[in-house]
Length: 266
Image 1 (cartoon, rainbow, N blue to C red):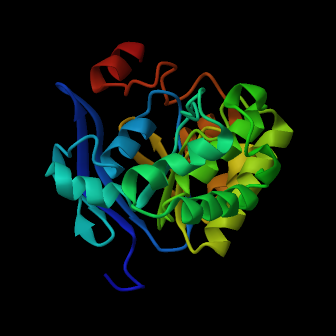
Image 2 (image 1 turned 135 degrees about the vertical axis):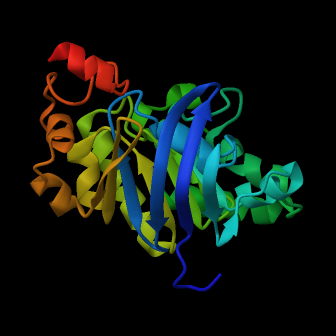
């Protein structure tokens, strides 16, 4: 894989959940160093797309390439690929009986044979990166929502992954905490040479820090471009989402409208 190759490439991707097709005809290329945000209404398939990127969900059709290679099906090979992907979960996933430092150290202790002293130094570096060195000995229950999110971010960065995936990183955060987290995402992406993919429906907070944006609706990508192009779009699907209009081409329950349904409505 060369530096100019995209770190993520999806081609003709179709993703199914059981007998139901959730996404289809997905084509996407994510260059190294960029922050990409995936927007879309609830139930549109954003989290399903993330499951394909981490290998949790196999493609029903098409290809998923990570780091220049098709994502493997074999468990051992997939395990190795996942070491290079940091994931910030919606609910943080912090272990309540471990301190902040112990939570951040967990991936290093699980996946490396580094000496304790080295792990301790790395943990301190990660906590410094998110501004929480002083909270190293605290427990998750003692943290605010924004602080807990930053601890989870430090843990996701513990193995120095080249690719970071954020699943609704602003859920449950107040506007100030959301701003802090978004600033961190952008700064860490640039300073550490990462590539970041965010799934979000928080347009106002997320759009300023991303390089590219896509929008998913009605089972496919309906927009791909820069933040400025997204805001200037006149596409009815895009405008309905950005403007928060309950009436439009995107059904309220996010299920795609069929031709039959459209004809009946007419």
